[in-house]
Amino acid sequence: MTSNPAAEIEYKFSEIIADPVVRERFARVRKYFFLRESTYDMTNRCNIRCDGCYYFTGEKQFAGENRNRDDWQALLETEKERGITFVVLAGAEPSLAVDLCRVCYKVIPLGAIATNGLNHIPRDINYKIHISAWGNDRTSLEIRGAENMLARQMANYEDDPRAVFVYTFTPVNIDQAREVTELLAENSQKITFNMFSAPVGYKGHLRHTGVTLARTREIMSELLEQYPETVIYSPYNIVAHTHGKGLHELYSCSYPRMNPSTAIGLGRSFRQYRTNLEWDRQAACCVPDTDCADCRHYAAGSAVVTARMYRHAATPDTFKAWLDYVDTYLAVWVMGYEKGKNLCERPPQPPKDEN
Amino acid sequence: MENDISKTILRVAGIIINELKLEDVTPETFEPDLDLVDEVGVDSMDLATVALVLRDEYGIRIDEDDYPKLTTVRIIAEYINNKLSNDD
Image 1 (cartoon, chains in turn brown, blue):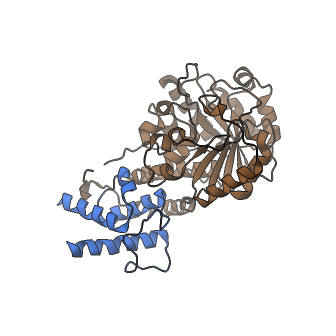
Image 2 (cartoon, chains in turn yellow, green):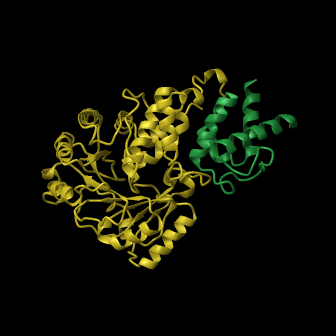
Image 3 (cartoon, helix red, strand yellow):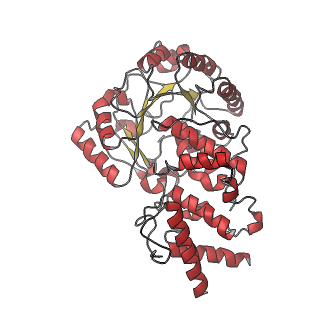
């Protein structure tokens, strides 16, 4: 623990939030500080097989599958009692376990479902629906083995306010994001961006390099500028997720897998349940089996960057950048939250913890 | 010194009450040894907000890695006083 003379503190927090626009945005996002997340693998079945799929890596894919609704109801009620207010229903393909998704929704009504979008999830399950897109239909056929994927996804979730397409940039699909975003814009659908983050031991060709990170940065910036009504993202998201350093190195990941403290925050409350309703602290994060050094995953950033409010309250620009990031995260993950205008168009580099 | 820590405890309690909009409690009645996480329901984002207000008030930085240690009003007050005395 080192001390820091007061003279080194450039701005007071009260000065930063004296700007009415900043104050209003902070007040808006602060209402959601109560969100406490855990994630749940719903089934070990999937209707497609994707190259680099995080679910079918490591041990979790071999967990037994508990399909008993009473057991799920009991689990979610226990989760609610211990303070969980937001659920993320993920692997392998939650649309193959709709009845269990519905059980979760009835107990904890805030959440999101990560799906490939090939099946429609009934509207009465009013969670955000994150539909994965990995390129245009030629690329999807090649690496996911599914034909006409985008057209089917778009048709399943047309005029559905729950739906956000999550475009995962890999080294081989960067420019295809233009084509996908244009189609979604024509259909008044929303898109946000994710970065392929290699699973532990991954030897394939989808791991990003300095060159592909730079190219991704260019395309993201172009699309954010060209389709501001379609793309839910911010300039600071681009900085954070296309940086040469991964999220853990930049922000010090607060998920239990990388954070031994159980005192407060994610290290205390977050759990990642497998299909047998068990969890393992050593593996607990939002994308288990991802190589932490390569993690630029959108879900990880939503928690990890958000948690670093203190260090972002260093200057007006770093705090505006953080507000844009949190505003994006809430618009992507929380039903009813609408993205505001980005406040920081030329964001700084991620601030370090100054202590 | 005893007087200093009492003053800091009252001020920290006041900031927490104000930032967390706690009702039915005043700085004078706030029990300084209550566990802020287990007994008051403070989360990491609440604590970060309180830390920023304390930074303004006392001109000290609070290390993000120190958050888990800041479990009661008394511990926070002692942390602040230690920081201030190290800066002297």
